[in-house]
Structure formats: structure tokens, C-alpha cells
Image (cartoon, rainbow, N blue to C red; front, side, top):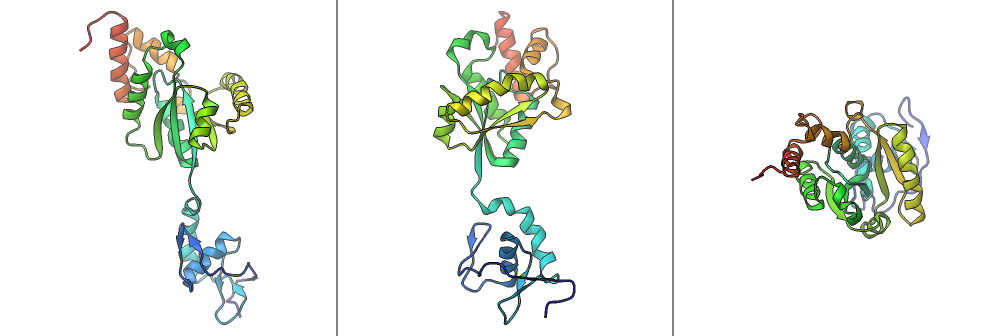
Length: 244
């Protein structure tokens, strides 16, 4: 008989080998492993001793289900998302979006766009943007940085990306990003996922950062420290100053 406060469930037959957090369990899994497997197929419970029925046993479940729920996303291979942009320069808002995207997808690639037709419009060269982004994200788990020399759709296919991530600060950002998302989908790229900017970063844009830096303003609260240093050197070079 099931214990008080439980219900009888009949999930699919227990497989000979089951996977918990991508690790195979032996032919005779422990009660905890059985409970985790029952959770995975939709019922919280442990197999009743000596019978084919299953009972939700609160004496077993509280110890295993919370940890299993917390680690549920590790049962399947992690997916990869691409976060494209010019990142001229990389801002704290960009880092926030990248960090949140890594939590959703497991791995996010900050894809620095390299468009030769716009080379003169960038303050930082593609190599500088790539280097600064890598140094700024060195301590972020699941965040990579790479250069995209051509079409974003081609790059996503080459990396096996499951999504494109873009950040939105306002409705005007959506107006600009929506046509690009539709075009990328037509070109064979994965779907675009939009993440809204955190309120603390909603006012930060690369163009405003460059404008403040050009007039000698303090941008330390807008960009990572390593980027602030690189931005200061690039601004000084553009203004004709000698930079070591």
C-alpha cells in the first residue's frame, strides 16, 4: 500500500540503463535514481518494493527532487547561441545580455562583425574589438568571442547555433532588429531570441559611450575596465595624440 498522501502512478517500464545528468546507471538503479527517472518522465515517485506499481513516496522524494530540478538542464547537451554585433565598444549592457544568454543556452558566442565597407566608421578596429571583448569576458563561464567575416547566417550554420540573441533597450531597437531577424531566417539562420535590457543598462549604447569618451568624459560606469582603457587609447590616437 502506498504511504499516506501519495498516489499510484504507472509510468513507462523502467529501462535497463537510465541516464541521470548524462551518466548511465547500472542494471539495478538505486531508489534515488528511480525517483529521478520517474521525475524525468513526468511523475515524482519511487518504485514500490515487490510490485510493478509506483508510489509517490515523500520519504524519498524531498531529498532528490530539488537537486534534480536544479540540474535538469544538464540532462541534454547544451545548445549554442550567437550574439552578433559590432561591439564598438563592448559595454556593460552587452556583458549583461551575454551572461543571461549563457544561462539560457549554455554557450553564447559574442560574434564581432567585420564589415569592410564600414571599417572607416568604427573607432576600434576589428582586431581591437575582438581582443577587448575576449579580455572583458575572460571570467564569464559559457561566453566565447569570435570574429564573423561574412554573413551571420553562414557563421551560425558553421557553428551549429540553435539561436541568435539580440538585446532590446526600447521599441526603436525592435523596429531596427525585426527586419534583420526575418532576413536572417530567410537566409537559413536560426530564430532570433530578444532579451530586454536590464534597467540599469537600458540607457547605455556604444555610440553614446564613444561620444562621451571623445569629449573626455568618464565612461568607467558604462564599459568594463579593460574596454575603458582601450577606448581611451583609441580616442587619443584619433585626436592625434601620441599613445604608447
